[in-house]
Amino acid sequence: MKIQNNELKIAQQLDESEQRYKTLFYDNFSVMLLIDPESGFIVDANQAACKYYGYSIDQITKLNINQINILTPNEILAEMQNAKNEKRNHFFFRHRLSNGNIRHVEVYSAKMVVGKKEVLCSIIHDIEDRYQTEKLLKESKEKYRALAKRLKKLNATKDKFFSIISHDLKSPFTSLVNISSFLIDNHSELSPEKIKYWANILYNSSKQTYVLLENLLLWSKLQSKKIAYTPIDFDIQWLIKDVTMLYQTTSAISKQIELKIRIKSEDLKVFADKDMIQTVLRNLISNAIKFTPKGGVVTIFCKQKENDKILLSVSDTGVGISPERQSNLFKIEKTHSTLGTENEKGTGLGLILCKEFVAKNKGKIRVKSTIGKGSKFYFTLKKSKK
Image 1 (cartoon, rainbow, N blue to C red):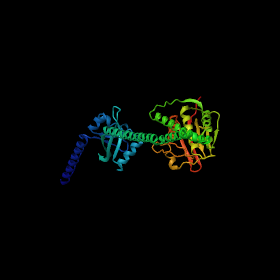
Image 2 (spheres, helix red, strand yellow; image 1 turned 180 degrees about the vertical axis):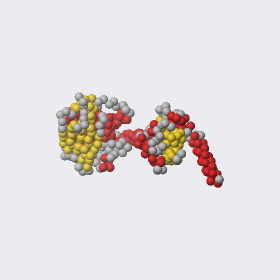
Image 3 (cartoon, one colour; image 1 turned 135 degrees about the horizontal axis):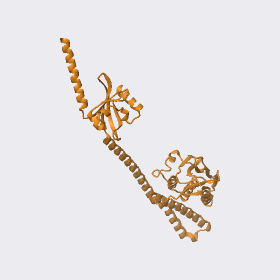
Image 4 (tube, rainbow, N blue to C red; image 1 turned 90 degrees about the vertical axis):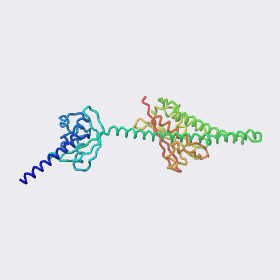
């Protein structure tokens, strides 16, 4: 009699436990699924799950979880094993609803025994709104960082502009005024040799100021996007020869520097903006001459690369550039003027223009340099298809 009473009591407790489980599971407002961790089939679902996924209880219990979770079957199996072996119980997935919509969900999954069978009880929370908010916040942060970076560059550009106006441009004009004034006041007392000497200084100072003004105007137009990119097909070797000849009759001859041209192919047509590339060559050759001592050599090299690119380089036997300065050569916020071997002045603006113009023409520019041995600037251009 006592044994029967105990059995009835255990049966009653089991019945009460089952009723509590049904109440907690079926009447729960949270989306809940019972899943077989071996096969992935959905064993049971509550009303909240049926409503959320858009299936009836008969429909949803015929589905495999891989028809809802958009991970691959192998990935799903691995995650179910993680939950079953209690390695992980918190997951972020994307689930597909019956209407085809895909939602971001947060899942808590733990193993439990139902009717002597081990299953995974998964509680699913829809976090689509939270995900989209976090995504927008992340995008806003990225836009803010990009804006801050652009603002920093604009401030550096402004600072560089005022530096050029207040110092680099004022200084040569002061020199021009002083030399002109000296010649006007003393020309009758000066010998022809002295007049020629001062006139030569006046000419060189005027030329440097003109180059500076030209670069400054190009740079300001580039910043305000007023320079049109007009690519054409042309033979780069003729442009190299024209620009080189310009310096062979001016600064190169005055510093006794030999200008060499090495062309490795006859078919060197490029598709680029001719005026921009002329500016690049002028600046690179001018810099090479500026930082090469008397009796040095500047070499302009050109060849076709295998990947339909034309490679150009301007190398010198000059003073070279330190590794620290090399890393900042093409950064507007880091540039500073350096005197040449004959105290030629500059602003560092020319290399900024070179980088901008080469980039506009879908090319890249880089430098190799060793202190005391010289520098080599390389850049690429697109080969003409004609």
